[in-house]
Image (cartoon, rainbow, N blue to C red; front, side):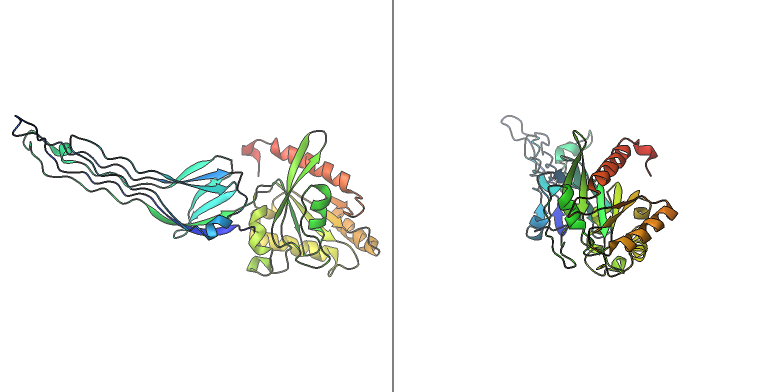
Length: 341
């Protein structure tokens, strides 16, 4: 089961208390203070792993608590530091403080680690308070509480290319035709209920990753349909492919579908409309597609958009599309970070 949202509570360990103690040795009737400090509480740490692909585990395990530090001992012995708790998350997870909405971590690399809740400090033993005028202090301090947070976890898939389109536009069929991904395919809307990733190989030894998300519908940015909750998965993509069904079975004219789609993306996140993209006219093998394809191509020429007519069933146009997208992704990857938009 693919789960891309979860909420958990984490609590760092409490610091151990410092103690009040005095030396008790034979022939030393007035031994000085020797109370040790308490150990620090353990931290809660999040780390990213490519071995995980979903947040499903966090639907069942919702509470994580680090070990508290141990109290100090006599003979100036410091208490043991509490053990940390490490929470392993899928690569691509964004961690938010649920109370404030602040982003605490964005785990985009395998092995990336962030301390998300710090343990409390250990208390000070009375040996810390001895002075020239107070040789027998009876003061010691308690350990402090560790941080406690409720975290909101959001998983955003890491892909180079995002497929965007209305239900039944052919996204799943396309990703199955150009990669080894095998999403569910059927001739009814909303076949895709979860995002899918596919690795597309091109050239001799190059590749790029494509993300297929559930179809959008008009009003998706208000929460309508299934696509809204998965739009986050194309936020990280460097390039978008807008899939437009040009067959006679399409419910709307192709130009109308494209314009509505662009408006939905802009309403969800302005940055998505600034992302480089190309238009893919799908299902050109179906009778009656010629007129609709001509309309879309004329529209794209006027606006200087690249348009690729394809048929996933017959593989017509797929090689040209793959080569073009591969070159675009390579160009984006080779662009210095400071010059990327």
